[in-house]
Image (cartoon, rainbow, N blue to C red):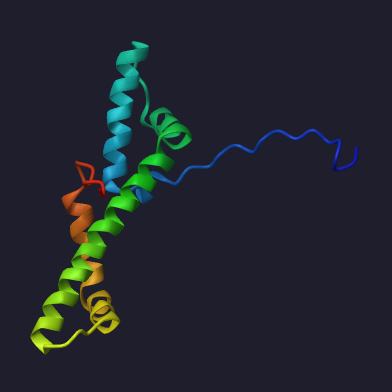
Length: 125
């Protein structure tokens, strides 16, 4: 068989190990596990719910979460830029944004993950 006529099956999708899941993702999978158990009237394992989550829900959830996170992060950077520019009595522009990234970005991401571990962040308007 040549490459154009050869029939191939789709490879099995691999999912990240449980230890690499975000806490918020783990909570969504656990909620899906409970919902599936009720709907199917049987015990659904975490692995089964995780497969369902990654096959059907993870991508749109992650895209929405990232969009909301970037929106909130941009607001924090803009606020920092405004405050620092007011302090210096001149527009600091991208220098203030870079300062925020260097000094506050990591702590801000930690805050975001703690703040939105159980709930979804607000979507930008």
